[in-house]
Length: 335
Image (cartoon, rainbow, N blue to C red; front, side, top):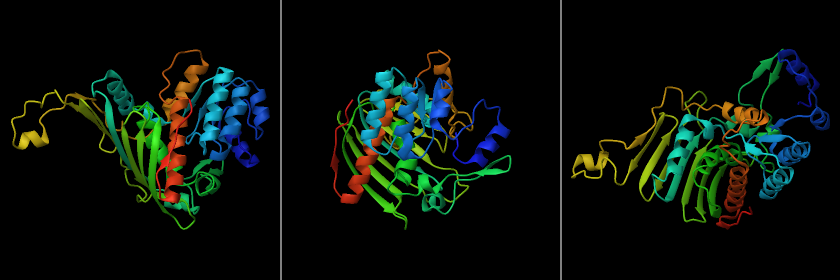
């Protein structure tokens, strides 16, 4: 749905749509099996709950909501209505993300102790409110990201909610415990929106998380995104920029390295994914396919369930409060 009548006209003329409307109630009255919520961050709860009450499964674009209270409310509504809420974390459905989840679940790394990540994007113009993130033109209408969504510091604008949420979505598919303590620092653009972010998280099971990112990448540069995970029995590396996914185990192929150069650079990987060229490029088809399969009565694997979104919002909200106060934030996330 779109509020702008010209946008609706362009969508009707470009796609075989049974309904195109600017009214939520009219859309839901048509009996939707599934709904994708991709409205501004601050309206996610309103639109998700309306869809759930109408009997639809819901896929929410990240971030799930701006506040933990709204995220938990959506989760409660989904449970009460017997519907599924999932998050549009595309990385979780990538071949690297699926492989990593399998390794973590297998126990090959032992008990997870540390997870650290870094990513960067070209977002200064969009988060400054000076431009979008590229234009898609349909039937003469130019669709572009709105500064009302991305450039307002009071409404979830900025790098923390806009991009670090990606990183948290993937990390939280591996670390299943609740965030306990969050400390963060941010660098701001002139409009007050964060563009540089560093977040440290202690989880209830003792895992330490470190997540950094910035939006200062020059346009047209291949974005870096990597996640490194350490457990009691091994380490795992995911590098989407260089398209690498592998793990080394404490009792693995290099355990008997005698010393010298090989003891530091290693000779073999114990576990790895044969990554094809292009596998590290972001796609968001996986979440949409999950919703379609769910609505068609299949039994797809939800790789970004509602609790992942709730925990991510709790971390982002606490990080924002920590950056503003200069102090760590203690928190507990309700089930």
